[in-house]
Image (cartoon, rainbow, N blue to C red):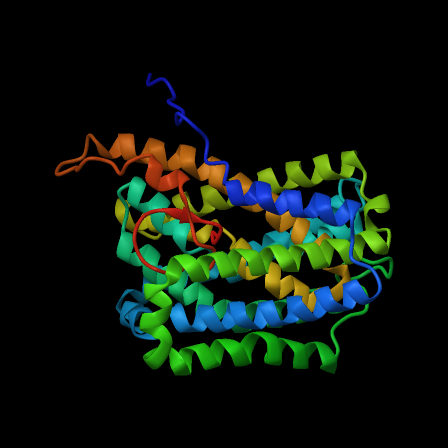
Length: 366
């Protein structure tokens, strides 16, 4: 029997530490009054800039070229936008059991609606010696689909799901919410796609500097959301026991998706390389896409919507690092196997929101 081998260091993303540090700052020193208005306005502008850059980076031609592998990409999209939400709806049973509060459940359900990751899916697929081009196209498809699918699914499943006590779903979705989605998400993204012909090279050439803009913008969104939650007393309704329950439920959710994507792909007669791409692209959720979406969709109640996503993101990085390492060692016995990717390619974060191809992780899963 083979002894399990663990990575020399787990991929604790430093950016995640910054995110939780920002949450702590918002809890201790939230913006109030005029400061809160300024922070909210800056957050709105940052979200529009983020989605403009997403549109400018994303190669629509590469995504459309991948349509030749429609069966594989359809499977990944089904995992991301069908299976995940169904499991999220099933998790509703943990609320009457007292494991989750309704606001935390709404946040958990929201995380099941966001698109898949790009960078980490590519990195883990590469490390495990899977179908990297498929992982690249899957990330592009998911990002494109998520711009429309996530708000629509959120409107359908969370529109009236709140309990009126400050949960993400309280208040429902109105015409004003739809207008915000269009103006803050769809319009900037479409503008980035239209202008990509002229600004695409500039964006790629300065991707490191713009990556810092991405990360700073997301930190601002997190500070604004959690600061509003602090002012409204949201944290007084979240006990350590409920946070522990949330972590346990998310661990089960991740385990179920990892098993379904691996053995389901086998049942669908995909080859080993395709199964690896399906597992890593179909079991993840994007932090970089989910955070600004939550801010637009839930406004002042966004803090409870993004907390489950932040915890799930770090959990998926740590668990998938172990699995990718195991798949890489298993592939060493296959004919024509090549040397595995360096461990550093899985632990060094790339700029948030980057969609460039190649190995390396980032907060997009972002």
